[in-house]
Length: 127
Image 1 (spheres, rainbow, N blue to C red):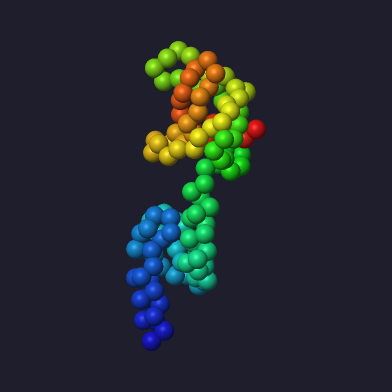
Image 2 (cartoon, helix red, strand yellow; image 1 turned 90 degrees about the horizontal axis):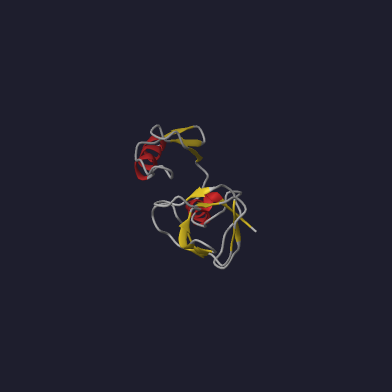
């Protein structure tokens, strides 16, 4: 009877990383053979949901949470697509707006001398 319960749980669960149904239990851990992710059998659905919410926040290159209106500094020379111009390291960008462009550019801003553009948060640090 206990084996049936474990098998039923295996069929109902899915990997939190890749959403695969092909998972198995090894002691106190669930393991996904497709992506290699491991998680505890004692992890509740509430904890998983809370961690997913935390992951949706946009963070800078050093892990600081970014908000609308923040000032950030560029940490790498950024070539502007379709132009020979470069946004230099140390350029301050004021009053950013967070946006989900879907292509990895999650910051909308206006840079003096360049105009409006989108940046990736991995190339900025919060000032």
